[in-house]
Length: 274
Image (cartoon, rainbow, N blue to C red):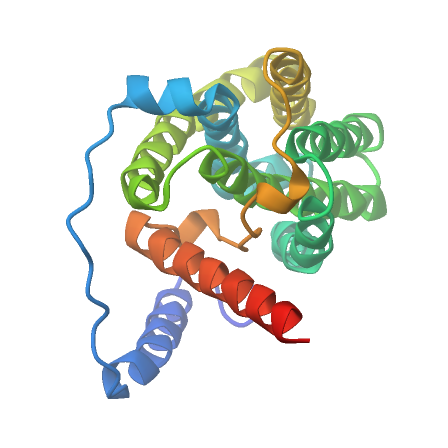
């Protein structure tokens, strides 16, 4: 949208407002009844961390990664000397990677140990960060780096949710989802502050160094957790559900998980009937 109007004017604020209103219109016109929700069981953060230490720690780490992407990527691009058009393209590339890689990674996650996949995906994210550090002076490599980071961090969010839900009863998922969103928010608080300090002291590469270090920490902790608990058999895990960090709420995660469970049950019934 930066290419459509003067950034100092009001038009760029009007366009998103109109788009949001248009997006809400189908919901307002819907005649479908509101889903009925049972009373959820409460779950403390301590209980949640016992069910899935990796899920909680990973959400904390991703909070820092997301806040850097959403809050500081444009600041980094401006410091790196990019034009307005290049800045808008750079920021958009994070989301392009997220959209294109969600489903392939989700398909793989339903067919292998999720902790192992979390390690691999986080390692790829680390490589993307290193590309940004080493080749940050070349715009093409910046786009490649943004694509990789966006394409790994967003699927990791869904992977960690699915991994956590693998250890929960269905009735506990709503409370657990609320806890995970809260933990993710805690991680997001520190991201812009730390990135700002790094960029002020070592320059634009501090943006990528921060994200890369977080990915490395996640790789190490996921590898450690793989030695502490046996893997759940693949046929006993729940389905991967694509979730967006920017719009995730406990209720939306509950609805998405219910849909996935119903789809799994229908698939089992079809296979039995055959």
